[in-house]
Amino acid sequence: MSLRNPVLQLKPRTDRSLAAVAPPVASVAPAAAAASAIVAAAQGGLVESAALLRGAREVLIRHGGEVYRLRHTRNDKLILTK
Image (cartoon, rainbow, N blue to C red; front, side):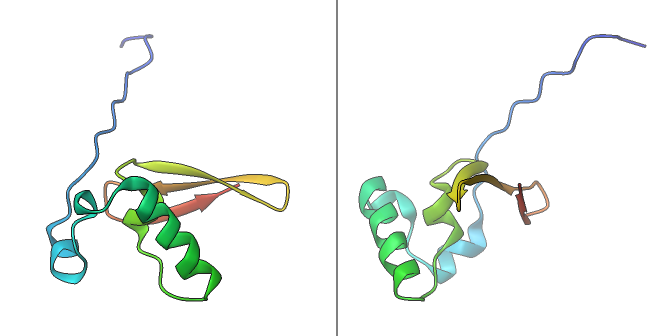
């Protein structure tokens, strides 16, 4: 039994089912994608998770003075933790 801590490397995952629903995120500049996500959220519209995560496996969100972590799991689920 090893006492060393395992090293975990997370890699962005490509999801082929998203291609059928929305245009690829790579075709939109990251700043434009983030801006459109903010505008859609302000209007109460739909925000794609790809626009929030921008290719990463997790993102930190500040809300009401608290920091939350939104994670995209290997099982293609989203988990929001405080």
